[in-house]
Image (spheres, one colour):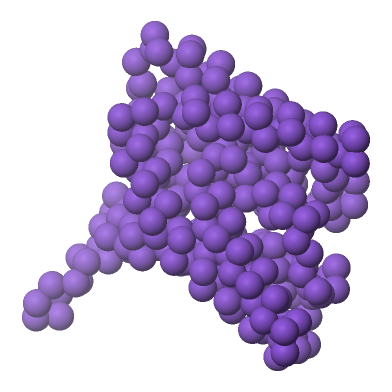
Length: 277
């Protein structure tokens, strides 16, 4: 009984970590793998590999609910009248274009990446490298005027370029949101538009990745595994609601430099820890 209670506490903690790190550009996968180093679930490696991805569905549900008006392409009126929001459909078509590079790379190299790159050294290095990138990009942007101010201003070419940057996030420690935001900032997208497009992009990407992981794991869940997965996903959803609101408020007044420094400090600590472990 005590053992089951401890596993529930671990799932809650992992859900909190996922909810915080999925939307901040600091790498949710990297943090989950780091937490697993110190606080391991009593589960098979196959289940944990699936859990660390599928738990992100809770975070995705949070963004869908918060941005429902922007994401849902239909608007219902009285007398059974339905208005199609062409602008929203246009954004989703651009999201599909942006998803293509990442989908191709994931299908081809996901198993290889998991085998050779899911290591503490790689995670720490990615945290530091992209932390430096955030600081440099933000300094460079101080003297630039964005050319893309809103979601509707994002072109198909811009969407494809952002999608190419998202490919970088296949390396753990990079951060999917971090890679797309850095790419968007480099090509002249405002922070708010970059974050919102990242939210849109996360929906099909994470549903797709979760489907792949579940199919790979199979549907033979034990009751304990279903409980752990359900708790982690639910907590990730609840925490994500607050984190998304915080992020959108934060970037209206501040840049991403603080996240860059956080990544560098965390990466350096990890390198030292695993060097002297």
